[in-house]
Image 1 (cartoon, one colour):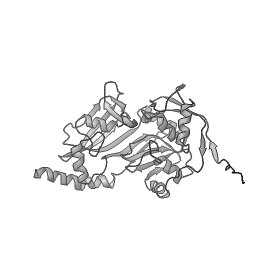
Image 2 (image 1 turned 60 degrees about the vertical axis):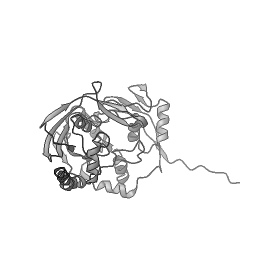
Image 3 (image 1 turned 120 degrees about the vertical axis):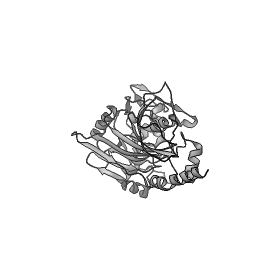
Image 4 (image 1 turned 60 degrees about the horizontal axis):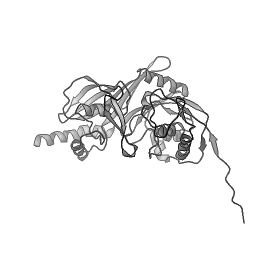
Length: 328
């Protein structure tokens, strides 16, 4: 009887690292954080590292459900990366390259499509970062500088070098990054320009889903809002978050009584139903631009054009909604 032979090991082991949590990753679960930091490491192996206490936050042991806070120091232990793990679909990986807005030796900026997560985790095998690493094997140190929601389209910045990542995280912490979003909200916005300054608290629903509420117990959150155009039935707003809390723009606009159209979590059910019928298939929130200084002090400014589906809804769906309102 022939003896079964075990295949030769085809894996590598990562080095010990310490990572400081940036503002944009505040509130992220440690297990999802590690999946982003340890691409190629099986999910089960990450949970074993957590159970054994090999992952430390600020020197202490934590559970998989722990939510990181800005400024936390995470010790990431050595981890074995298996070759031959899940491989992203080649067409999907290649398609992400079509969305590159800018690239130099230190940075990569893309116009992220709506519906694509920035990284894998929570039942998502592949996000932007995994697809790009697969499509561009030369980008071994590619890392997310910040995050935007899966449902949101627009500007997403990644660092190709750790030095650039550290530098940009510092700029985010110091409030030296300017971001601007376009949001189409329910109703006729009557507030002109204003700063929404109310604290936000991240809570957990059944199944581990994060839900954000306005609460005095929450963290400071500020969003500058200005009217771009009103259509009567809805309004297009320019939103500039001064802080980077989870779902900040979505919850702040809900708080004003003008939730974003297409927002299934914080939106108006009746308005969303009408918008879907008229062609809006997702959240109308677009990360239009981002600006910051490079290592030499030169100002960099990136802009992503409004996605075709959102542009079409403004030109067709909104006009139809206006007609329906007049005919009532």
